[in-house]
Length: 75
Image 1 (cartoon, rainbow, N blue to C red):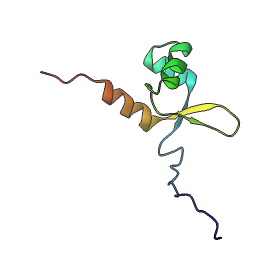
Image 2 (image 1 turned 45 degrees about the vertical axis):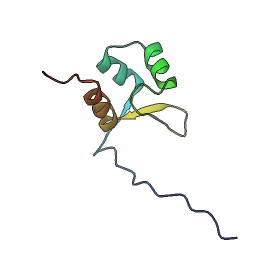
Image 3 (image 1 turned 60 degrees about the vertical axis):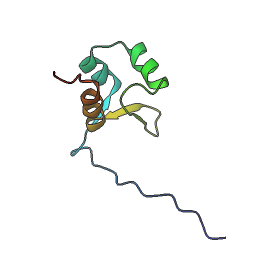
């Protein structure tokens, strides 16, 4: 049986889309670490990724998209 291949996702370089640490994200959002992890467990916060060393990072573009989605429309 031929090997299964997973779809290839284009990896953006850090220069184009920097990876932010949790302290950077919570400082920008003005929330506690506990709130960030609660939102993450409920899938309510910005998309995040786990690095091989176990640390969590958020792409700048994902944080910007999250903030844009939170904006209320102007009437």
